[in-house]
Length: 212
Image (cartoon, rainbow, N blue to C red; front, side, top):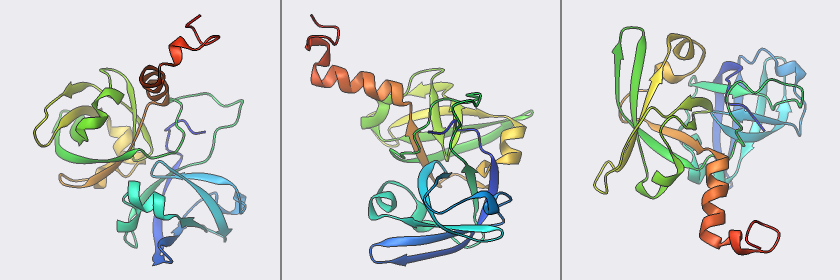
């Protein structure tokens, strides 16, 4: 479990496609020597298992499923990544509850600065529109952000959400590198997904689950 509060940024050192998966090596990691094989880490919002470590690097194996729902197969050497280690039970929850299970990709349609704030418009699949609410939470590239505005449209680019990015977030994450046309990794609020799933499956009518 994560919070969506990026701990550090690091760089892609190696991204090698193999056996329908990928080996990703991340370098310039200040806490690499504290990592151990088998533990989890969020890489741009995707929960990965550490498979090897060194003085300032770690490696993960990216599955075919992760390559399908993320843009990890597009990572280039030198690209900046957002990293977060899992929450401890005693940690403050500064963002929101993030599983590290990327739901899919959005497209950065527009970005513009207004004073100290950078406003971004991201299109998401129309079928995912029910997962976002005004002033609700969303994870973008592993960053916990607030949905400011929503515009629904059944025609391209589909549902668009508005995000307001403060200077600190641009400074400590990779959002400063994202430009219009880029694909963005997204995870929707897990609470909303459970509510929708309960509604779809009629769980409210099951004895003991609120239905009597």
